[in-house]
Length: 322
Image (cartoon, rainbow, N blue to C red; front, side, top):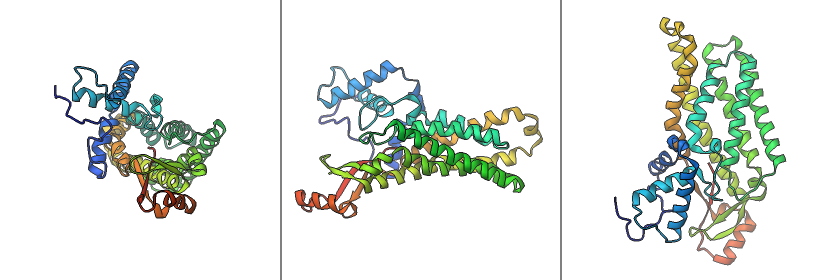
């Protein structure tokens, strides 16, 4: 076991978060789907170990590997703002098993309107849980607002999917296979901002580089949410765009026509292959600790910061969520 180095800080990222590669390594670590299988008791012990380490009370006999593994479990299961344990379905580590099943079914059952309606509804229910779980926890949202966000996003997805499904009846078959992606992309543009509307209305907490609170910014919230929308669409894009092309060609072979019952499971497995890489890659597109130039803040907040700190705070920082 490696000894704990002098000055070890458990909250210091293991990889450079200023680069895409560093962020990719970080998210490959914390979105590891195997952590979904870790028992609740072990997650709680990991949290206790992380909190002890933060307080400078490292248990005797602990190794650096044990501390880093505890931090991996902590980051995968506990919210970065509140420290509360996230529900299993909403964790980013559940995106591969949950997303592969839903995406595979949406891509397989796209031909009839009832099937499209059912799977888009299930997918948007899943997305609503994920978006709520990974919001900026400093901005609470009421049950009514959650309901409105859910209904609006689900309605958008269904309208897009059903409308395009009917429109593509006479189009080339491949276009019909891309309808689920169009619906998912459209719904993400609605679901995420609606589920996190309190951040846009009231702003998110912004800090200086040393995590000293400076105020609340709506512009920071808008930037963070826009980045999350881009990340989520990017996460789904390769599987939902490339896989239909693969299946369109495979289904022309006689052996594939003889095993139609296996087309669904095959698409689920292939979706899993895409998501295994795309979940961490999409999360890594933008830093989770997002920054915004002082000049881009609301005038009143900018003036308040300058009055207190002068030109010592060129950028503010905030958690954009996932």
